[in-house]
Image 1: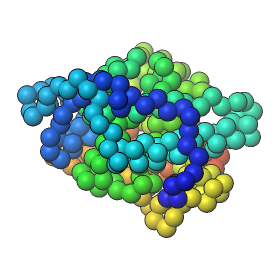
Image 2 (image 1 turned 90 degrees about the vertical axis):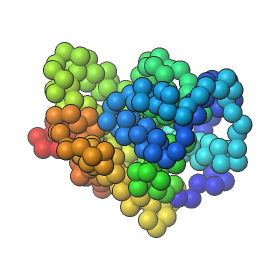
Image 3 (image 1 turned 60 degrees about the horizontal axis):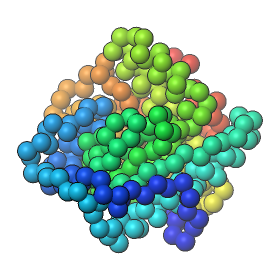
Length: 280
């Protein structure tokens, strides 16, 4: 992905020096636990207590790797702003209000609760912000088998896609229904929310290539591989469990890759209507 030297977003809230408590998690095994906890919708913080972690009142030093990761996220976010502003005008007939992305190290707070390695990247409708610790990119590469800069860009684009859903009123309506139905039905709706975000991410990838020509050989394969590696069935197998479809909240590996590809192939937001689809 060609991102160096390109425009970055001004909608970055950098809390990496904010003095929030810093969770010191040791070992790649724990990183894998954190990642699996996030994608399976489980807060695994209790598993880490007493397991090699300690509090730190400082936000930590910003390393060169941190700086580069922050710049990468900023450029990726800027691309989402350009793409969705244009698509909202052409396909929705409305203006797009860009999301703010919060960068942090270790832990921070949001209206949706604490953000940490145990929660992973997420979008909070309460303040309309995406929360991201770029250390998660290391988890993706080393333990989830999802390496590459465009795999990381896919993660950012997916969380921004939840903001797109919020802008369109989809997220609020879906979450309202989720509160009124059984757990299994709620999980089923969650899967449709996540797969639509994957589809929107595919549209973003298509537009980035057509508008900016920034995709390089292998980039699209990195994103599709990342979508496959974080499917509910794959994560449950990798955790030593038999996949249980009624517990899925994000979709299977095949579904996630398929809906991303659908968005990339069509470029049309209407093709991402997972809520009307009979077969996901």
